[in-house]
Length: 521
Picture 1 (cartoon, rainbow, N blue to C red):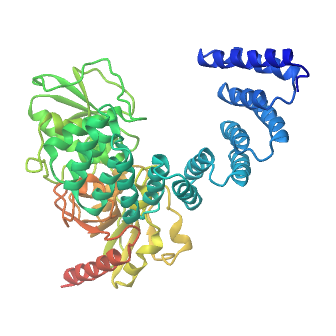
Picture 2 (picture 1 turned 60 degrees about the horizontal axis):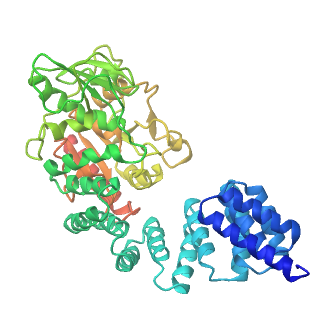
Picture 3 (picture 1 turned 120 degrees about the vertical axis):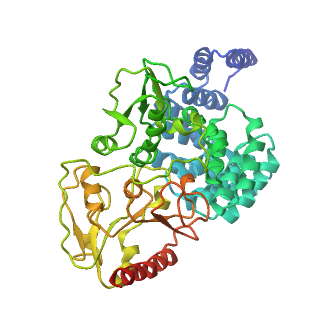
């Protein structure tokens, strides 16, 4: 402590100078002043606290931790100091250590709002939803009308598939902060899953004016409109996808096609999403060719030979090879530019064929031949809902007279060896590209697949295809329908409750037995 009033006045003046520096944005100057104070008074608690906080803000994390630990030695129960250390550790990537430091803050004050919030956010990021939900619950209970607590508690409940509770919490969040669009966006997602597109659309149309620049709102509206079958408005809103984070439209040396005369022109259709999207949307090459265009389609690896068989495709380009053309258009933007509606959707199949020279193995097994694929790309945003463990399909094995073939490649390919399917599911290898898979499909009586590229390939080939859909299904399969306007030979088997595949598989097993009996008859 200063030993006289003159020294006290000097330090008080320095504190005022530091506050002025902070107000002016001169953080380094403020740190220098606080350091000067500590040279005169090493145990000055405010200077230690402020210096540690500024060090965190400026990215000097190790320095911040050291200073804040000095402060804790003087104030061992102050939660702000532990919170500051935890924040520095989190920013250093030391997440376990950060959680431990924050636990120290909560020992000093179990209701410390910044710590409860930050702990919940980090636990949510790490996938520890149970503990994250507990943190947000405690925060909401201790701090009435705390918007972030209520909103994030709802988010955790949504991720836990507790949609009924999540709906209540999102409604509460919306009441607390009526000008924030996020609760409305999430309510729309719940109503979408529940099959109430009108409610979802109402939420999103209310949310858009609250933050017109937010791309997620328009993107979600596009998905709900498409899900409801309003393709004219849906595909127009779907153009918002290029404003989403991580979904930037690539640049090209030629102009984007916006409806100009295509007679005698070349248009390059650029791939932008997954394999299934290319297989589904390459059907739109023919309408463009009918307008007089030469159509070149960019292909993801393994698709070149298949795509070349589509009507209207003049040539294919390898992934990220940009050919000479008059215009370019992302493939999934074609239906918007053509004004496609549910009624005008090109749905003639087959529109793909097995390329000439493709080796097609002879499937000599007796009985009803069925190929199956049970997992899609694990990086797909809805994969936890659409993919399933092979074991779940075990009831299908009870149907007699079926010869089973694996069409699975990539994740899950080795599952049959360690399941009830071992020895009962023939693996046809190598499935080098989709041309070989297509050839195999021509030898099968039926294809069964989750919502992945295998289903699109079978549908485009005009082969009998049964597709397993989660309750939270993609927009392209619409709502409630058992058929698909995109693929006339497809039958949809829908899940009634998230993750509960048993009734759906039981229904499929019954249908399979009937199909086998019909073939025998």
